[in-house]
Length: 228
Image 1 (cartoon, rainbow, N blue to C red):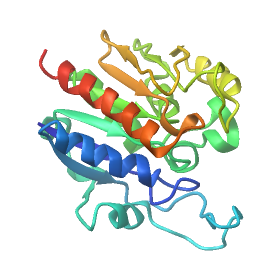
Image 2 (image 1 turned 60 degrees about the vertical axis):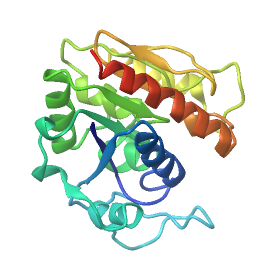
Image 3 (image 1 turned 180 degrees about the horizontal axis):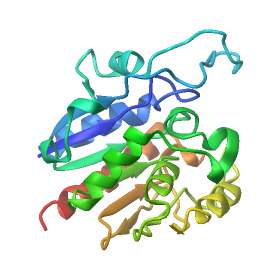
């Protein structure tokens, strides 16, 4: 099985969440699959100093930055087709909300990169499963906004501690006409009809072991879905 991993850069505050990405690679191989990293040849909308949390006055390219995580093995989204993959995973990270979409700046009103929207819609149209980790359901919500696809997804739970306002995130996601379900770090949401799986990961206050277990649970569900 060939599983795409869609990356927005390198680093939780302005790109893809590195730990979630690496754990995704590991989980795919542990399930007997092969991963293909995918990036976008476009600049990030923001670059953050990960020590201070402050914005930096420089430009970084998502494709080049993502290649740091993938050890240089990465494909431009323009050069890959859903037929090349059996499924797709989108790790978390603020690149989802700052570069794939403008959610971080405008909420649910923010736009989504056309090439990202097109790729996700095409994946869904041919029935290829998509696994969204952490905050990535906002990308799926924007991709399917205005279509007949109304996905059931999770961004975490208000019943457990989170570094983010889960309720506000969920309320905004509802504006895209997605269905939002509360799930803890020990749970995942499976939308069988639309072949979408989502897992909270670092949207919750979680250890790396808890995030690994959450990703492993989601990946097992993804490979089970691929049997049908």
